[in-house]
Image (cartoon, rainbow, N blue to C red; front, side, top):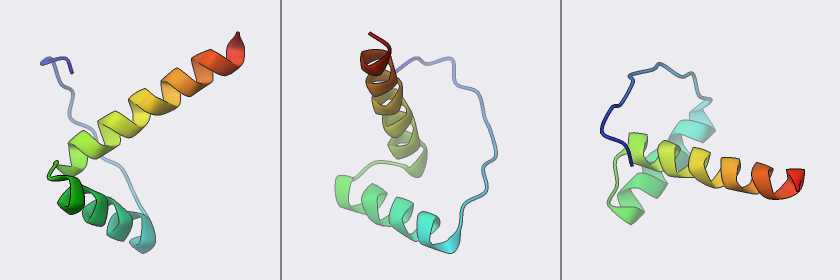
Length: 51
């Protein structure tokens, strides 16, 4: 992942936050890393659908 990171603020439901914390703990990643990976995967899927 790029090192030129931008800090953002997001609002999540209680369930979304719970799931995010759970995934991060299970994988040993930060919550930021989980969200970044999810966004990359989403972008890849969108690019495939556009073809």
